[in-house]
Amino acid sequence: MTTSDPDALTDRVTAGPGGAMTVQVGVITGDLTVTTTDRGDGTAQVVIHYTGAEDRYDLEGGPVRIPPGGVDVLHRAVLEAVRAGGAAQMPGTDPCP
Image (tube, rainbow, N blue to C red; front, top):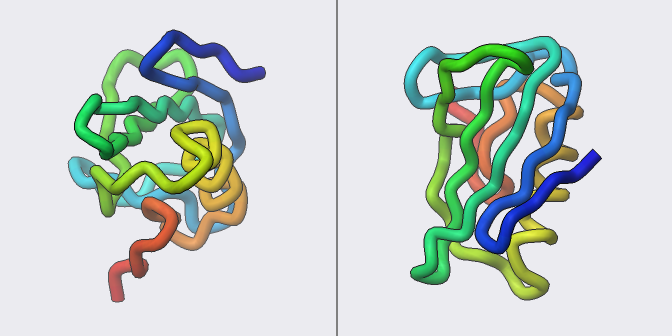
């Protein structure tokens, strides 16, 4: 279920095998909450955390330019990437070797 405010979209997702790559702690896996926020300068940041936990982590590769179609399009792409796993990063960025 997506929740939103004027600047952010939030969803819960289960990470696929290999999880999602974060800047602060590396890969995280399991049940995650993803928030994509419009920074107001044409870019967006994605913060991810274990559902129910307080610690928040930046998804590797951000911030990124908001694509045509807006933050909603980017948010959906992030959710797909995290569901796929494989040390998911911001869509359009390459995974770490």
